[in-house]
Image: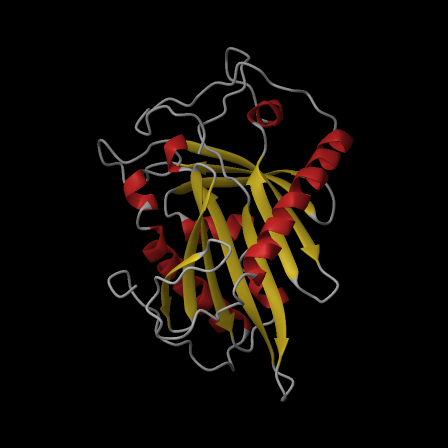
Length: 278
């Protein structure tokens, strides 16, 4: 999701321009840019109703707003929608007896990246712009050390904005900063240039809705949205084409982590589909 250069290129791209920006200006920019991301995430979570794709539907349905259900199994819905030249993927599921706060404790941007991509090399918080705004540098690489790996270098400099809505819904918006701003935040190389690896994450993030049953047990409905443009080269097309299956595996990990570490009294999670079943 950056430029169109080859995904197997071993050298990072060097940004020819970088912008020096004050912390106040950066905070204002992120606050403004993240508003549309938050609205996009809320719209995606409202579409069709969380986890309401119809159990046993087998996928394949398409809603009026363009979301197409790819799979629905054991309470997990995977859907996608075209967005410009790229695609948006959405996953939704119910976590019983896990509060929104408990879930987000294990699913912030850095932890989600570790679950999302096994080739995450490093994750660093660059700046804290307030209680609800962070700038994060994520480095991805081919940790398998195999020659001719699918990719060798991807850097993402992203903002993370956390907001609690009036009804208690938690929203975490994550997206890349413009390359020129990112270059101004990263250390310079030996030639005095800002080295920015290829990578672009469009409007993505979490929506976690609070539920309370008649017995007072607090649960949550989780919606995860990620927007990809395979033509930009962050992920190989062969991986993007099977992203629905990959999301099922990620969700299974997050469900297990949230339920076993934050709510040991909750009933065991239903068996998740593997990639062949999805």
